[in-house]
Length: 246
Image (cartoon, rainbow, N blue to C red; front, side, top):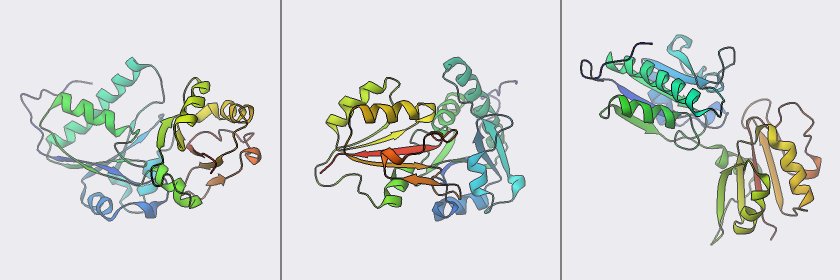
């Protein structure tokens, strides 16, 4: 892919990064909805060429299908590979901006919380530091899981931690000591290891688990010992709240 020469072309369009919530289309904000309606093109991330874009599925009831394009953001830990995909994505979006288009980029949850949008933003600013960018916040899975169970995340002087599941799960022991509530993201294939760790440590606090929040296939449970972790890919698109016993 040829690079765009920013000395010859300057962006005249606007980019809107739009948080569309954790999965329920009705959690899209009014502001986000209005921007999607006026956008000339909307980009949605997906993990692989043949995979479905979860974000695109959420917004398809609100906009014409031909407005939506997908960009691959692979699930890889190889930084070099990721940087190349992020760079190509930014160039693709920038070309539309240089044509004066209003571009939307939708992301699950909130755009600035563990989101692919963050990397797109970074690379766009490397291409053109003056690119016109507007970010619209969205309901995060952290807020959504608390609402599903009607459980407070923090009150009074309590301490709250929102973290990806540590690669070294034993590190979680110290986190649980320091915080009253711990929200775990990016669980994936390590769900079984996490469950075994909590059982071994005799965790006696409150446990809340949710997968694909807001979707018809949503699975929620508030009992660690009844969690059916034999289900295939149960950890993917899941979130857990661990709350210290009062």
